[in-house]
Length: 288
Image 1: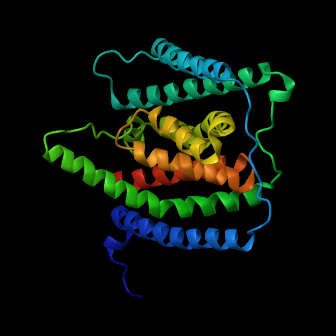
Image 2 (image 1 turned 30 degrees about the vertical axis):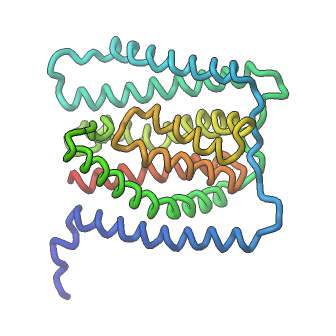
């Protein structure tokens, strides 16, 4: 049998091939979505119901979330102090702990707030029932359709940042802190904890807060498209990273579209999980 070139099995080659497959699948997925919309034109689409609570109520929710984000850092600092010049393994554990405490508090705050609302304002997060398999298929379809636009946007954004740097207007270009711990130098259990945080915990919490919460609230005031853009902007801004901000805003819009496509919160949750899983996979391949 002919020998397989070592270059073909190198992490860099596999990552490049994966990018190509995602772009090809994304073009097919985008065309399929357009064809499906044409096919079902004239029929009433599933619609995510707007959340008609007051501005003060939504302001209170995000004030509580912000206060928890400050408190979470203080709590984890006491549970696992870093000291001076902490080791990479300790930083990995602290990052995992920070994420878990933050996300746990966010979901408790959100559900506590939702349950405190009058019964008529406690709308279900999904307006249409959907089996898990159907939600998975729709989420994968919208994830693939999103990827080509993501690559184009990231190329344009990197070119913009490079030109600004040449003009003497450098902007911070550091990746998100957590991405530095998805490598072989992190303790195995900390690595697994970070993966579970990224692929399971964060998608559930963030989709409930930003799509089932903020997006539905803004939809009652700004309409569907305005709410998609505004909620996606807040979603990107609160991640606090300039380098990934355009990608996260585009992702936020795509998640809203996925939510509206099926009227079920499971679709954006799964799509968000697949996006994060793909990101982790590529980071691992590129740092292997």
